[in-house]
Length: 147
Image 1 (spheres, rainbow, N blue to C red):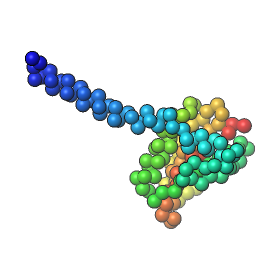
Image 2: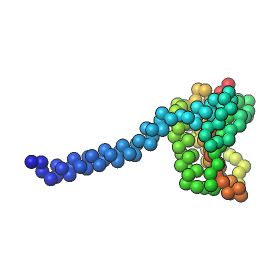
Image 3: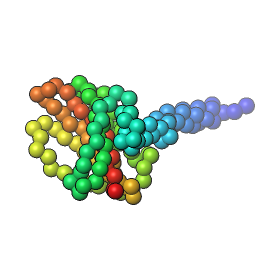
């Protein structure tokens, strides 16, 4: 017969294991899902934007070509914040490089948050821009080729 204290220990270990699995699963599931990044990288040749986004090509300050896509959300919504963090998780899970922690000053009346990853092939940016007068928040996912 197993003592009651041992049963409680085993039960506690099982609960801890389940909590760990549920906490880590979203990151594991996203690690293999690079659909948005793949679509942004291929946009210049396919013309197909990631689901729900609007994309444009651009020529950066250093004359490097790139693609920027954005998704529109309700102003400062939790959904926008989650999407921003999910997009950044996708970038860092699917690409390897150096985080650029420098701040890029912008002339913008509302809030602005940007994260940047510099890789061998180019720079990935995820930005969240609040547009108060338009009552919307935009989440951008951009890739600028190193050319």
